[in-house]
Length: 224
Image 1 (cartoon, rainbow, N blue to C red):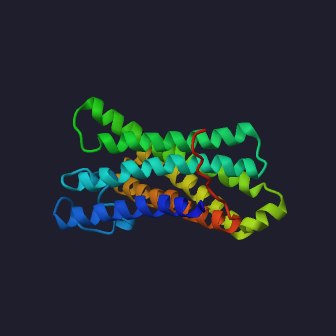
Image 2: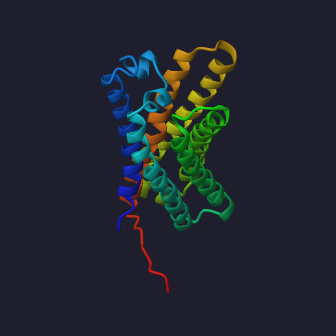
């Protein structure tokens, strides 16, 4: 089967899920209504953690995290086809799969109370965002360094777009560190979080186009 629908699902499912949970929370008067990408009235976690919205979030996010892990394993196989070295390829896959596993941790403990639960939820979202974005950054760098014929097969413009999105996430991450440590501005941090998530998941949409152009296939093998 073609691989591009997997990457497409990894873009659309978490993106539509978060937006849907936000709209449902506003409809149920659980949070105030606003445009979070500019107003920063709420964080993603706050928009998704109250009942009954949390049940929708978990029912979609947990299987989505599994798809994310599978996607990064496919990324590893694709990089092998591209002739990428073992160490670089293994780091990219490790970061992506680890981020996906921590997304499961985040989904499980979102909405729970207590210091231990808050710690696990915070580590879950931090590692999920951080490791996934770092994996995307490294993947973009490897794709940009491909030989011209291989990069042209994907599309030089598309490879450049993936680099730009990864660089944008890096810039947002650095800005978030500044606001968190020096200005303590929750509104700015919320705005950054929404845009970061949009770019991080949107990256998989570009990956879907790259896989479509490459003609990458997933082969399912039964055990011998």
